[in-house]
Length: 66
Image (cartoon, rainbow, N blue to C red; front, top):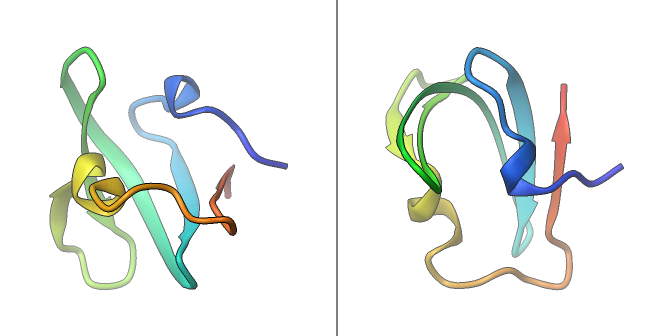
C-alpha cells in the first residue's frame, strides 16, 4: 500500500518504485522540511529523496515501508 512522502520517518526502511526502477533505502536524516537524506540498503550509497524524484513521478510510483 502506497504511503505519502510526508510519512517518512528517520531510521525506517522503505521501497520506492518509480519509472520501472526500484530503490530500497533507509532514512538517515531530515535536516529540513521536505528534505530527506537516504542510504541505499544494497549499495550503502548516500543520496537525497529529491534525487530519486527529480524527473517527476511515473504512473508506477509506489512508496511502501519494508
